[in-house]
Image 1 (cartoon, rainbow, N blue to C red):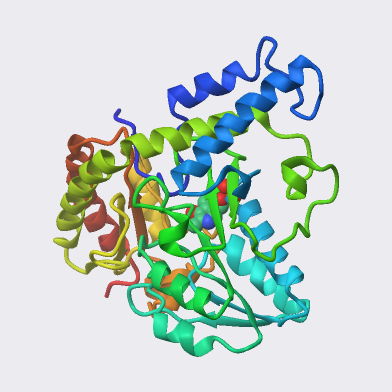
Image 2 (cartoon, rainbow, N blue to C red):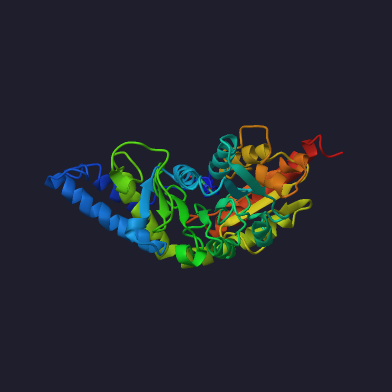
Amino acid sequence: MRSIYFDHSGTTPVHPEVAEEMYRYLTGDNFGNPSSVHHYGLQIRKVVTEAREKAAQAIGAGAGEVVFTSGGTESDNMAIHGAAYTNRKRGNHIITSAVEHHAVLNTVKALGKEGFDITVLPVDQYGMVSVDDVAAAITDKTILITIMHANNEVGTIMPVAEIGKLARERNIIFHVDAVQSFGKIPVNVDDLGVNLLSLSGHKIYGPKGTGLLYIRKRTNWRQTLFHGGAQERLRRAGTENIPGIMGLAKAIELAMENRETESARLRVLRDKLIRGLTGIEDVRLTGHPDKRLPNHASFLFKYIEGESMLLSLDMKGIAASTGSACTSGSLEPSHVLLAMGVPHEEAHGSLRITLGKDNTEEDVDYFLQVMKPIVEKLRDMSPLKD
Ligand SMILES: *Cc1c(COP(=O)(O)O)cnc(C)c1O
């Protein structure tokens, strides 16, 4: 049977060149601790410095502004918690949106319980935050705005550069979760006007458990979560994950090399897939029709449960997703779809197809061919359809 992976927003396979690079730093004499003064340590310190320069350059940053972390979740937590506590004397107001990843939303909510004043902005029917709403929410107590670059569930690309401009004018720290956008659309810290930016390795063909936090020079941000050694210039204590860092830097390098051609290729496949599926009755696209990630297609099917579609597709060898990986398994429908105004019962019928480097036009054709009978069968069985 064919095996087709259509869940690249959930995670991606490790690129062979990334695996090779990691293996190099798991074997032989490449095990040194970069804090050591002997040659085992110095040799590793040198390659990590080069990897950091390369990673920083990819987002238009300086090497001193990049901290390696254990992933997108840690980067988001560190960014938000650090900005909040370091600026507490100045104010206690934080602005975010209703469609953020839980790594942002739950961090901000936890701060709300600790006395911070939280504004969670609504989104429109496409999952888009309005720049005017951000402007209207700002008070003289606002210390942090955190808005994602592109949404993982519906693929919508947010107007972050305009929000960044607002934040800079008011001298408010701006954090952007760019986990989904990096490698697919341009991500440059100056163009976006960010102070803090999060990336994750495993969404860009890198290893799981690796990530990066960009911290702009002179941002009033200090580490408030990790206590320990002086690694990463006091911004992230703990002996560095050298194979992970080297793998992440390789993944970032490959993503930059391939971004434009690969995004153009996937956009064509995505559009074919969207045309095919929305041709079925009572199926509609979720997220913005054109301000969306080039590899991202997400839908709502009336009268069907997302979970049943996933199981039927999996029997045909196709791996897709419904809602987000974190919310599936629970009965709560996606907070993103609910925030977009999708009724509770309809939100259960979501399907997300996210394409990646090994997908071909034949994969899309096969998917469309098997999907039509699956929809018919599930609807015939559905108690939701009269
Ligand atoms: C996957 C994801 C994260 C979490 O990253 P991890 O490396 O899995 O911790 C954060 N934000 C967004 C938008 C994501 O898609």
